Structures are given as structure tokens and as C-alpha cells.
Length: 415
Length: 87
Image (cartoon, rainbow over all chains, first blue to last red; front, side, top):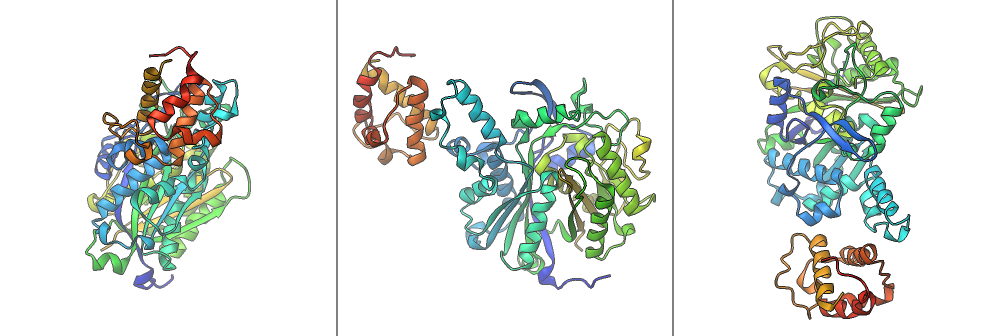
């Protein structure tokens, strides 16, 4: 077991900003997760008509002028909202903060599809005259648009990066922040993941063609991880960003510490474009535990990635059995059952919604688990109702994506 | 369209490009950029909107004609003379 790292290498979460289909701040999001409140609704998308989606209703104008909203992208607005909320929540004296020492690291599953589809539709109304293609297209579609809009909005002159990591991206943003803080590249990181994906018809159409788009007469029951009647993915938008700092800096300013990122890992399946691989996922979990110096039995809650696809859920269940055995702990829950798959935001939102368990000792549920699939057998799943665990010290957050990218983050209660 | 109608069109375009601005006191003889927050990308939006709405193609070396409301209207009058006002 590795020694605990020196305090300067211990990275803590000190502020949280988020927008989810069922809440626009951590308190509301957590309340919805504990109350079984879904955020999935009917949603009209271009060419396809009505689909089901997780839709956010945060106030874009809280931190942006109307002109900024018009100039930028939905992912940019989500990022700007979450970043400002996180900084406000952190209690940092922003006016006195050296913004050349602030880094912005935001995971995205994809970026640019929304604007490209919009522009192609627009020129189709002009007989494909490319002279009406917007001059805003390039700045809106560059991969760094979401974190770049944050720097423009908040006057941050330190580095910014978009981490393209499919649906493992939310964790990837956090991991990048941890590394950059440990390397002393920045003093404060704003990191996590965002998704604007419901605004591109292509993601729905592609999942539909793949046979992986969820349908249900009751939208709130459409996303059913580990359930026999699961029918696929509900696409969602959202964002989850944190402020992260080195522990001594957080202590020096008497910050509220939500938790410490004590372990992380990323690896690759190297086996298939879309089908996940339980062996590599289990290895990723094992590597994160090893780096954290923790045993599987030290984990209290596993926030699962399961998206409610046929094979995906089976593979993750197999990975969790390999990593944790079939014991009564850790318990396993799933956020997508409430809000759908928030793509680049998923990993971040799913972790953040679980962090209040350090205070209330409760694991929120996995809803819509009416007929557990024997192929996804996991005795520790928190089905349909929250479970009071009494005390929660460690949360492990899975986030996996296409092309076989796996990410795991472990957060420990700071005492 | 007559000059008054063209002016209303330009005001409408400006309102969409700069939705936070109060255009009620716009001085027609003072440069847009001196009265509003307009950068080069916003300026291109004026050109793009005229292209989309009226199929007007403005050569780049004539963008200078769009500096003030007065010069813009004067420049567009011959181009839009035969266009029916949508107002």
C-alpha cells in the first residue's frame, strides 16, 4: 500500500457548480436523487420528431449577456454557468485570485456536431449556397470552445483544455486537473465535464440505428440500467464542474472541502469500437484502488456507469463482480436512471450527486430497476429507494466510453 | 423599400446581433462602433443577414459603407429599391 502523498500533492474539491435535468445546483440535484425525481422528458429533435431526453433549464443569463449566449454554444453556456457557480460555491475571493494560475479542464464526449448540423440545415434553406455559412462556425466548433468560453467570461488567463474522452470525459476532466495541480502548473483548477448532445439529432439517430435508443411511454421510466426491460440510452445534456485545489491552499483559506480525490485511473480496452470490455474496466478499477492505497472493501459506494444498453450493463456488472466480488459492500447505484446519459457531463454529475453522502450517509438509488437482469446480477445494487449506510468514507465513480476508454475516480471524505 | 423601411431593417438586424443594447437613441450619423459594442464578427453578421434576407452581396472593399446608419441606408437604397418591404 503506497504511503499517503505529501500534502502539496493532495487534491481536494472545494466548490461545485452543476446543471442537471433534475436540478441546477448540488442541493436540488441531491434532493431529486433522494426523492426519485427523474429529469427525462419528451423532446423534439430535428428530422426525427419526438424523442426522450434529459433537458436542463438553468438560467443562461445568470452569468452571460444575451449577446454572449448568441455568440457562443450551448456547451459554452453550460460551462460558463457551472464554472461561475463552482467558484461562487468555493468562497474563493475571485477578485484577488491570480487568474493566470487558474486552469480550466472540461471533458466532452463530442463538440461541434450541434453547430455543424445547424449550419447545414441553414444552407439547405438557401439551396446549399455556402456564402450563408456562418463566420461563427469555426470559433463555435473548435474542440476547446466550452472551456475557452469560460476563460473569456471569467477573465482566466491560465491554460484551458477540452478533454475528448467519449463518455469517460467527466472523470477525465477531473483527472487532468489533479495532475496539473500536482505538477504545480496551476493553483486552482475548474474541472469536470459538460454535454450539449441533445441538440444534435445525429446522436439520437446513430443510437437508434444501433438499436440502442431508449423508448418508453412514460419518459421517467425510459432509462433502466440493469433491468430486464431496458431498451437503451436516454441522451441528456448537463454539466458538472468543481474547483479543485491543493490541500494546504484549501486549508489556508478555511475552505469547505467536499472530498479528496485519492485515486484515479484511465485505460483502454483495445478491443472494439462500441462494445465495452469488462476485463479492462475491472483493471481500471483495480489500478485506481491501488493508487489510492485502498482495498475494494474500503469503498462504500460505487457510482456505476451503466447506460441501460444490453451488453454495456452486462459488461460493467461483470467488471464490478471481478473488482469487488459479490459482497454486501460497496453498494452500487446509478444516476443515469434519473437523468439519462449526460455524455461528457455524466462522469462529473454522477460523482457530484453522490458526494453529499459523506454528510448524510445515504446512497441514492438506481430507479426503474423492477426486474433485475440475471446477467447483470449485483447483490449490492441500491434498487429504487435510497439506502442509509450510516457512514460513507469512500466513493468510486466509473465512467466509460466508446472506442474503449475507461476512467475511474475515487473520492474520500476529508476529515 | 424606401430609406425609412431600410432603416427599420437595419435596426432589426442590430437588435438581433446586439440584444443587450438600447437602440432607441441611436444617432444615425455616428459610427455604430462608437455607440455600441460591435466587433468585426458582429459586423459580419450585418453583412450575413442582408445576404440571407435579401440576397444582397456586399463586396468586402465596400464594407466601409456600413459604418453609420445614414451611410448604410444610403448605400443600400439602390440595391433594395425593388425589394418589397416585409414590414
